[in-house]
Amino acid sequence: MEQIISADAARAYLHISKRKFLFMLQNGYIRYEDNGNKTHRYSLKMSDVEALRKDMNEHPERFDDLSGRFTAQKSTPPTLAVVLSQDEAKILREYIAKCWSKHPDALPSKLAAELTGLTVGTLNRHVSRGNIFGAVVGGKVLISKQSLIGYLATPDVMRKTATVQMKKLLAGYRRAGKQ
Image (cartoon, rainbow, N blue to C red):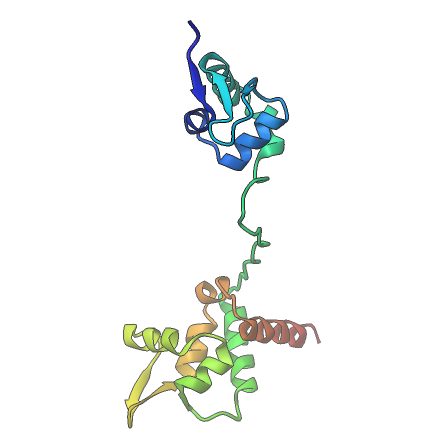
């Protein structure tokens, strides 16, 4: 006698989502019997489910059109990596220093956050780790402008640039370099 399993057991056996499994049922990827009930509606033969799993493993190209179709995650475009040489980093440091020349040499962490787009907590964490020089004066963290510029304009940090303010600085630097 052929073993009959529920749709949920078949879905678990195939390691696929409920939405994908329902789509596959309704579009003829697997044979099933519909008994019309609200619960336990579909019955499947175990041999058919095993054959589908074998087919999914041996010929994944047949199921390529289903990949990513049933995910709720938004696809975000990849962020472009910024690659700077040491010479370009030096010129970028000079450009940022020129842009920030009207600001004091000891930046309050709130102002530094506005200039860089990083959060105050992130900047304070960099200060505590020693990546950026800063000091606590009167209960406020003051960050050395030169130290901040030096840290931000390194090739490793610029490679991971993600804030709007830093992208604007980088775009301005590139425009200034082309003139």
